[in-house]
Length: 132
Image (cartoon, rainbow, N blue to C red):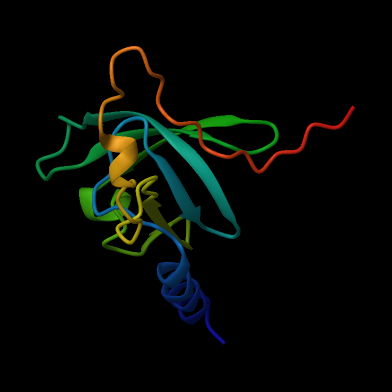
């Protein structure tokens, strides 16, 4: 079984369960697939003016132990999950995660209406228990 087949299968399976975004911007949390899966925060995206084609210096704060900062020079297709790419002979994939999944229902109508003057908005029931 080749590594390419494995990473493609992982991506296929993750697309079924992860709320991915089509774009990647600074402050996005991305999922990176390399020799393992890990998360990172995009802290900066800067155009690489030394190249004729559009390449970008993408700075990630890897959410690993210990946390590390890395800067990778990538094309937009690579840091937006439109392309599996190779770095140092290793297949990689990067895709931003959406914190507002498309299939999430809209908030209940009552919670979107402003509260009447002098009244507070209704409280949601907590799923937490107070233990004394």
